[in-house]
Each structure stands twice: as structure tokens, then as C-alpha cells.
Length: 161
Image (tube, rainbow, N blue to C red):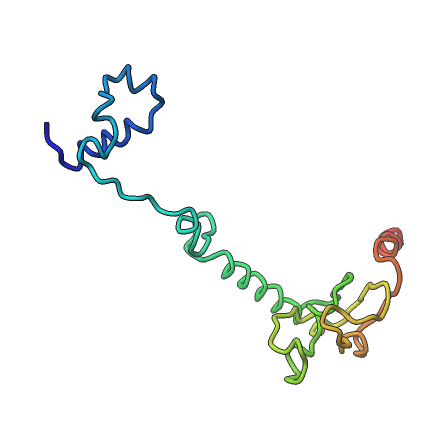
């Protein structure tokens, strides 16, 4: 019997079977382990190594983050062609200071261009700042209407007429 790679693989796979199956398959206890048969077992990949790398979207070659960025770009570009943008509870993600004010702590952050719509309706509980702690320039623009209060109740009233 040869001790080549095929023999090593078959003997290694036998050792992973339950003991009762090994006996039925005719494996000898003295040669059923890789070390006893003269094979050196290479360690398999670590779990972190198997999980590392970019995640892929099903059926595409783009990474999930690239797909999200492309969707965000399509949505952001659509605001320029929008009559009314309804902003519910958002603050920092629609703040135009992220695009225009280099001194702002959120400068460079990807935001939705809600300010480019013809009219913007913002539903918020209060005029308080967002997570970044800065005032939102969108709230004081001439094309923005602020509706303060419970957004769920306000939306139901809008729908009811």
C-alpha cells in the first residue's frame, strides 16, 4: 500500500468518522490516525481566515459596501428632480454642512441631498441638534417647512387629509 497523499487523505477522513463507523469500514485502530500511518496533517484554515475578506452580493462581483454606496448615490442624485422631500426625524444625515462647511465636524460625511428638492418637509420632535451636536442648516432654509411634534401622529393626520 502506498503512503502518498491520497492514502493520507483517506485515512484522515476515516479518523473524523464516529468510532462505530470506523470499525464497520474495516479501519485498523493502529493505522487509523494520520500520525500512525506516517502522514503529517496540515492544520485547516482558522475561522477568522475563512470569514475575512469582502462580502459579496448574491450574483454580483461588487462588495456589499460598494452596492450600498451606489444605491446612496442614486438616491442622492434623485433629490434634484424631487418636488417634495419628507424627512422624518433625521438630522445629521441631511445636514448640508457636511458638503459645504470644511470647519464642520461632519464635513465629508456622506449625506442625502434633501436640500436640493424644491420643498422639504421635516418632521421632528424638537429643534435640538443631532448626534454631532451641531445646528442643521437645512432647517432654516427658505424651501424647508418644519413640523414639530410626534411624527407618527403628524403623518397619520397628513394621510387623513
